Each structure stands twice: as structure tokens, then as C-alpha cells.
Image (cartoon, rainbow, N blue to C red; front, side):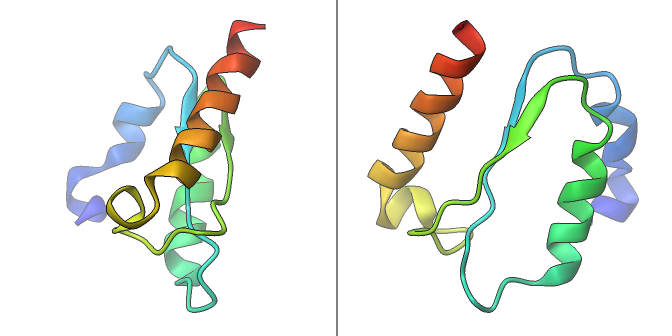
Length: 80
């Protein structure tokens, strides 16, 4: 559906730091990663951090600790 919503128009206007958290599941769809990389190129400040314990889209439900660690480290980094 991202094609129809044209997320590129939105990502190019984002002013705050952006954290993208793909999983490292062996069956990761390369197309999804390519879309994420393309969107990431549009943001001014951000980071992509792969979460080894996650399986998209259930990461927050199955292993919230893994996501929380990544988010906390990202916040600490941007706060300096």
C-alpha cells in the first residue's frame, strides 16, 4: 500500500530524528528492506537498527525488551 500513499512525500518533510527497526529474520523480504532504505534516504536525521530478536510485525508483542533496548539507545544517542 505504500505505493498508493506515497510515503516519500511525508518522509522528506520529517524534521525529528527517525528510527527504523527492521527485524533480522532470515526470511526478510528484500523488497521491504529496499523500500525502507529508500525512505530512510529522505529523512534528515535518523538511523536504521536491525533487531535480531524480532519477527515483523510482532516484535513489540513477542520481545518488547529487544525493541526497548534499541529505542533507549537511539534516544540516548540523539540526546547526546
